[in-house]
Amino acid sequence: MNTNTNLIPFQFEDRSIRVLMIDGTPWWVAFEICSVLGIANGRDAVSRLDDDEKTTVVITDSLINQGFSNNVPGTKITIINEPGMYSLVLTSRKPEAKAFKRWITHDVIPSIRQQGSYEIQKHSHARARTIYEDAADRLEQEIRVGKLLEAPLHIVQQESVKLVCRDTGVDFSHHLTYAKAQQDVKQEEVMKEPTDLAPELGLRNATSVNKWLAENNLQVKVGKEWKPTDNGQKYCVIHSWTKKGKEGYNLKWNVNSLKNIKEAA
Image (tube, rainbow, N blue to C red; front, top):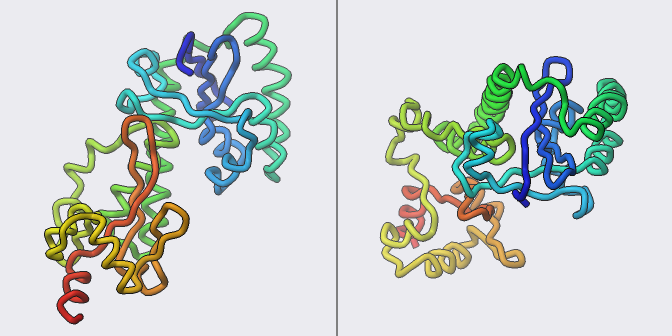
């Protein structure tokens, strides 16, 4: 998907928008379009698009050098094509949607098709900075929601950084090292995945841990994935992961609570 890929940064009102020209076809960063259109749950909206309206782009050194992302090479960002963008426009009830569509159809698309670019490249450095600022605003929003839900702050920070990185391509993970909440994690707040839980619980491996969790009505398997039961939700958090271009989620469990449950059994 990254063959003949070039970044064209531009701006709608005060928002930075990135267009990737891939083999002559324009693709938009899904998160940015949802943000412009005021679509609160962008992930669900994009998931409802047809398969030929969306895809993922793998971050390469070339895209990083062009200013598309500061994420590590090999990770992915969801992008949508022109039909996919129009599908999202139809789902938005915001007044900005009509103006945005008109701007795209009457200005941006004709310019790209006629010239192969959009004439704003002299401002690319300012727009790269704005992309970073937009991602920081998104990170702040995600952390605020986590606090409202009274989730452990160190977990909220970790998961919010991953989510923002996945959706925007801006990676804030290097800042976590200096975050006070990461340094002040109390023993009773430590959360671990099944693989790391095994020695803590005196079990053989992750498979044994998952079996024990299920036997104690803490999780249940739905299809190929483990999901917490109503009883188990208070002891775990959903942990997203990205590895070698793939992404998914698993559960992190409160070590101290599980030890207490096992000892009481």
